[in-house]
Length: 156
Image (cartoon, rainbow, N blue to C red):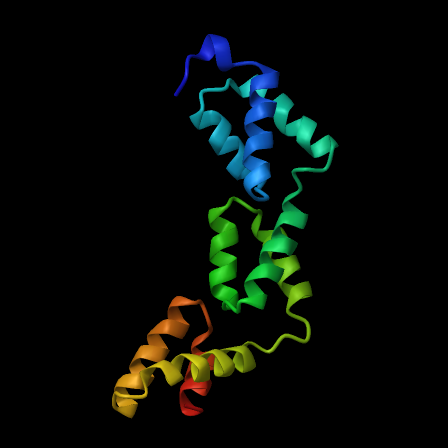
């Protein structure tokens, strides 16, 4: 943490936030936590966060939409995505609304089956039982539902 007298300015907080947002989008909670950790005072943090809200660079709903979209494309399971967004401080109501919107037409089981088949192909030289155990663990760590994982295991 740097000295407060030099750093505890609105411009210093803005500079910090710009650097953070240059790396990747952030939730409001992540921004607040980082500014607090850097030693900025609460009034400076409030003004900085409001500034970035006003110019639409901090928006938890848009952040959640982008996060969900990126994770579903990889693919990750819904429960893992939900967990990550909670960890990033996004409001649970926003998370649930955005997951609901994003997963219309998305079939978690199909994504798990495709991922399981791709993963199982890496384990050709081991027994079927061991292959299923490894793929099961892999899919569960990625946050797929138990139902989706069990269906995927049947298909390998």
